[in-house]
Length: 469
Image (cartoon, rainbow, N blue to C red; front, top):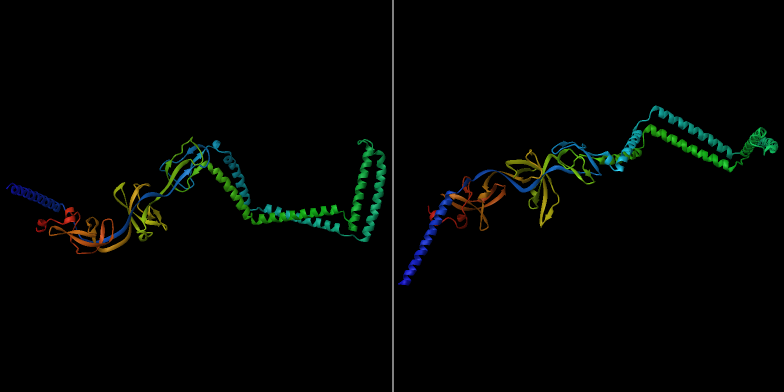
């Protein structure tokens, strides 16, 4: 009897527990049904997209360092100030500059003057003087050509006889002058008679030399030294004539392009060295950071400013190789920012990388998006959620993504039928962040879709007593 009583008690306890569990489950299911959220299955437009995240950056950014040593004299812009291309931002004290930079200032002036001379058109006076120089040079050449020709040619017999007679006469005159001077040769230099006789002797010697030279010319036996000297003078005269002609041509046509290029290069080199004493903006933009202060001792590489071109903001995102072929330049993009809640921005795909980058076995491609309606709230460095519209579908059944569940590897949604959620197998097509295209499934437009089916329904279905209502 005791065993029977024990069995009966145990069975009763089990039954009571089961009934309590049953009632608890029923109450839970009833409460879950009351908290269901539904939405009507409708047709509409679907913009399918590829989502990614990226960081906002300026169109162009530059960190501007000093290129030489010195002490900062002036700093012009402040943070947030707009600057133009080439605008001076800061300078160094002249007295603190290296010697090479100071000397470059002198070289710059000389180089600029030389270039101006080359580029300046010739005046009528300079052209006239150049023509006159050519005429004089040509006459000099003709005279020297005649002299060389005479040194190389023989004369007529009568001229030769006359020249020989002249040589005899001046030779006798020279001998007489030597005899007259000989007694006075040892006299003092201030002796008047000695000075007079020496002058006569010198003239007699010159006359004799000239007479002998003339006779030799007529005989064609010119002194080789004289001929070589005459030919050298002729060569020099011809070179001077060519220079005069070239100078005239240069004045008339302008400087040689090679000479101008060399002068410009010299000027540019000097200017580049002089420019080391200052920092200039390489492009128009906004000063976003100032690190230089007057009095700072700086060296090459010391950063002074950060410059950003904020006229155009970009976002670089990494897109998987699975989706990259659906991205095209010019596609519309929607952007949201955690730092700017409840506001959506828009843009266009600006660039699509042609080469992917492998990262831990996954290949990603960089896609650059240009914002088209950025305002002062959007700042470089902010993180943006980017959705690129790759496909637009019209008049399709739209299933909310939050309503989709997976059971036994198959997508399902719960439809409210007679107040009870019922699973329906579906297949989906294109999708956006909120909706997906319904391709197939036992659903019709207007069916109530459950957005938050309770977990008890997803796993085992509703209890039997609920289904019988």
